[in-house]
Length: 88
Image (cartoon, rainbow, N blue to C red; front, side):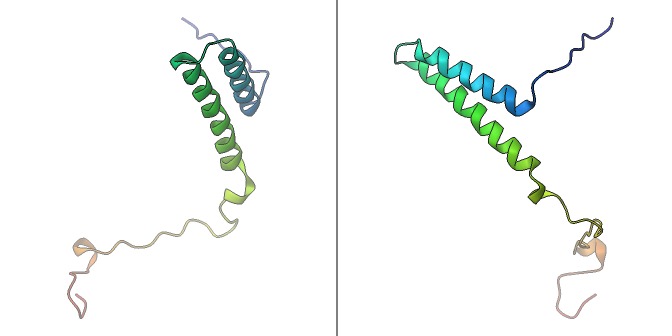
């Protein structure tokens, strides 16, 4: 059985913005109460997800080029450090 695949025509942030707007429009039609609050909360969550996506995608979060991955060597009994002053 083949999976159904389809191309998205909108970018992820655009879909989130559209979803948030849809929730807000639906909330306007509801009387004050739990259902309306839930729709407004979903709209805020979509806005927050869009902001997080922008933040994560920003070039300021990219690792520096050319430095590679630098790891610190863990300290502990298995690595030659016994916790006593004076070394091994």
